[in-house]
Image (tube, rainbow, N blue to C red; front, side):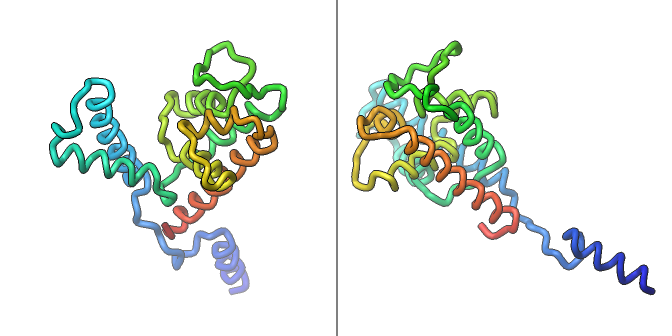
Length: 197
């Protein structure tokens, strides 16, 4: 009897007890739906910006897609995955020393670069982690939000570039926005693991 009691206590301690709830939310599918909404809206913006289609000529569905894209990408409650953490960790590793920081970002990132702006570090880390760069991936949006919170009321044309290039921005602040974003992504990933998002 003593052996059975000990085995049950050990099972409960490892989190394998049968009473532990199982999360039924399909977070990868929810994240994929967000990305699909963003891409649909980007396709509409491409028609306007690149193809020269007048906004008056857009269909109601296209207007709705563009509006939904904006809502999704500016939401601070987007879904995350392990790759978001990898990207932020990778960018922090790239910018682990101040002499690796390029404070004159022109949004041109080369394969042979040895100095990286905030944008280029995130781009490189994204490519290394996922094989591609997604401009509005949750990890990158969280860095943009961290910049907004650090500089409330400041309007940037390109948040990553302009914050990086701002004369008052310090290397410690570059590291701060990366760590803030990482903390938020890690917290949300933990909540998703508990099915609490």
